[in-house]
Image (cartoon, rainbow, N blue to C red; front, top):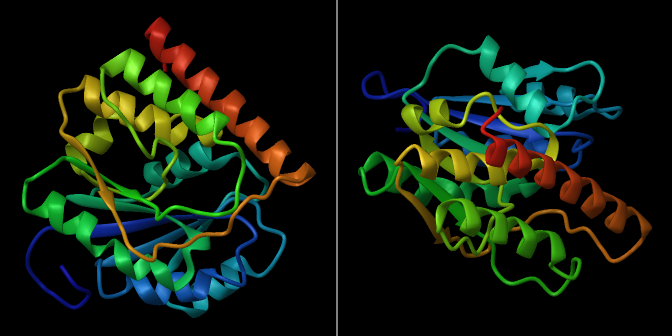
Length: 230
């Protein structure tokens, strides 16, 4: 449902961002036709992310200091009213966020409870070790073959989101969300999205440090689900 419609299910975009001042405005603008409300979750940015998001018409929830992606999103959800459908988005998509409408259509049509965006192949990035480990964890716990286990771009029904809460901490949030939804009997699909683009992490010190944090967060999230704790 587009902004301005007065009837139908409420659809909210929850945008995770940290130091994305150069991309968040275009991301918010691109999302406007897709949803009823856009909430940017600013996880301790030290640049103008919050101001840019507000200027583009989004509501902003700030953590003050970095709490990690999953905890920041969970904290925002606890402050927001319910919605029938949710669109999770990473703020570094820029204007390519406008291509996520297909995910919402699939969920709205009842074809799936969770629709996850698959990025086009990239010529930059790491060696895929964390991605393969996350996919292995999902397959081991649920039998689902995930090609994009780390994608933060996903549309969910309210019921699917409830099944995944409280959200896992840090960068374990997406892998855990998929596991939790599948274990709850939800239908999960992956959807290729053409020309979807985000800020890449390179094969440098900063990139490897980022992937190291990802790996630790995912390992913890999977271990907690093996043990049956949240």
